[in-house]
Structure formats: structure tokens, C-alpha cells
Amino acid sequence: MIASTIAKRYARALLLVARDSQQVDLYGNQLKAFAELGETSPIFLAVLSDNHRDADIRKKLIGTFSAKLDLNKDVTQFLKLLVNKGRMSLLPIVSLEYQKMADAQMNRVPMTVVSAGPLADAVYNDLMADFGKKTGKTMLLQKVVDEQVLGGVRVHVGDTVYDYTVKNQLDRLSEKMMG
Image (cartoon, rainbow, N blue to C red):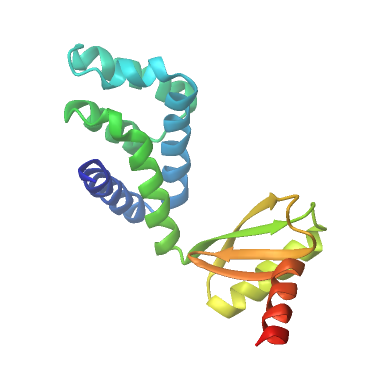
């Protein structure tokens, strides 16, 4: 809980800088790329997070990888700030919080479409357009195939679930017949 609160503060600070530079998505993508580097190589993140190691060496390591990833100077400085403050271990959480805040600021919401099999792109586009009109937000689509879905789709928009599956319709019909 405390880590999440601290991560939100750092994410908010970077978001303010990104917004002033009008580069919210760029900063988010670069932060995510660096965080994913830490996820694919846990040793890398562990070395950067080890507060017993010399901070200057860790910041040089960040500079080297920032150059290879072609990171913006503000993002690089932010990563070095995390080292200075002993908060580099929070990088994955900071990256997630940044993305949530950026999506909220840009009026975007995650939308997960669960179906028995892959759907045609036109169906996904129609769903995104319909729910975009309904919510007044831009949908960020995630496709999920669930073989337990007999037919139809289940759509998750933020915290709300719209269940258009055959199973749900049969359950509702059964309730009406029994009640």
C-alpha cells in the first residue's frame, strides 16, 4: 500500500513534466520500455535498485541504457532521480501508475473483449465505436479468447462488465422461467 502511494507520487510528477512538454504518450512508452527491460532481466533491476551500490555507477548504467533505448532526457533524469531517492525498485509500479493516470487524462479507458475465438477486425472496431459513444471515451482494446464462452462476447469497460454471452442469456431465460 505504501509502495503504491509513493509510486503514484512519482508517476504524477513525471506526468506533469510530460504534459508540459506535450509528450505524455512518448514519456509513458519510454518509461514502460525501461521497466520492461527490468522485468525481462531481473538482475538488471536488482542492480539498479541496490542502494548499497554506488549511485553514480548506477546512474551511468541508466545513461548507457537510455542512450541505447533513445530515451528522452527528462525520462532519463527521472530514472536517475529514482536512483538518488532509493526508489528504483518501484519502477514497475510507477510505470503502471503513470499509464493509468495518462489514460485518465487523455480520456482513454481499457476495454477487454472476451470471446470463444478471434473475431473479425470489423467486429472489434464496431464494439470500440459503440462503447466509445456510450462512454464518451476512447477505448483501449484488449482481445481475450476464452474457450469456455459458448458464443457471444463479454465486454469489460473499466470496472463495468457487459455480458452478451450465450451462457448469460440462457441463465436469464432460466431465471424468468423459474420465477
